[in-house]
Figure 1: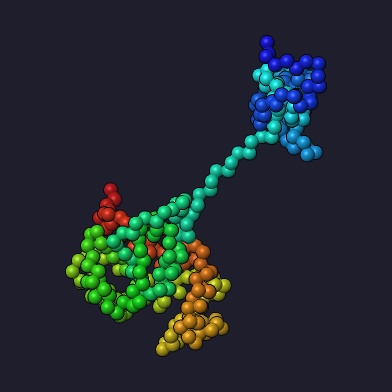
Figure 2: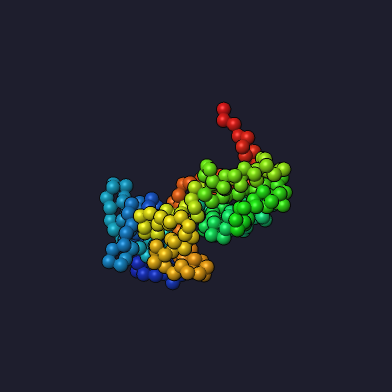
Length: 289
C-alpha cells in the first residue's frame, strides 16, 4: 500500500507538498494518476512548447501525456521534468604541431639540453608550431644569430649525455659553406653522440612556410646579391627599407601560420627529429626485430 495519499483533489495540479523532481528517461515505468494508465516511456519530445511523454502499456498501446505533475513512479507521486542533457565528451585538443594537447599544462622545468636555431625568426616559427610540445618536454629554443662559429659555440656549451644539443641550420645542402661548418662543428670533443645537427634546404626559414598559406603560388625568386628578405618584401609590395620593416613583414607572415600543415615537410621532419633526440634516452640505438 502506498504511503502517499492523494485524496479527492485534482491530481494533475501541483501538490501542496513539494514533490521529488525526476528527469524523464526512456525506459522508465510511469503511471498517470488521473487515468491509471501505466506504461513505459518510449518517446519524449517538445510539442507546442510543452514536453510530451509517450507511454506504451503492456498491450503495446500508446498514449501521450504532458510532463509535469500527476505521475507515480514506483507508487511515489513525482514531478516529471525535462530530461538531463548529456554532457558532450570533451573533444581531443590538438596542438599546432598535431600532437595531443595537454590540458592545464604547467611548463616542465627546463632541461639542460637545448635546441639552437640560426635566428630570431627561426625561433619564433618553432615556438608558434611546437611551443606546446616544447613546454611539455621542458626544452628551450635559443637563436644563435648565425652559425659561422658553430664549433666555438658547441665547445663553450660543453655537451654531454645529460646536456645535449639539437641544432637546426638553414640552407644545409651539399657543397655549401653550411655543410663545411657543420662538419667542423661535429669534430668538437663531446659532440659525437651528444649533438645532432640537421638542416633544411631553404635560404631562409620564411620559405619553409607553404606559399598557399600566404595566398601566393610560390615564393618570389630573388636575384643573387640581393638580401633575400628585402627582396621578398619588395616583391610583395610591402615596406622593406629598414630592419623594422623586415621585422613587421615577418610578423605579418608568421601570423598566417596556425598549424603544422602549413609548413613544408622538409622542416617539419627535422624539428620533430631534434625534439626526439633531446627527449629519447636511447635515441639512435633503437632496433627493430
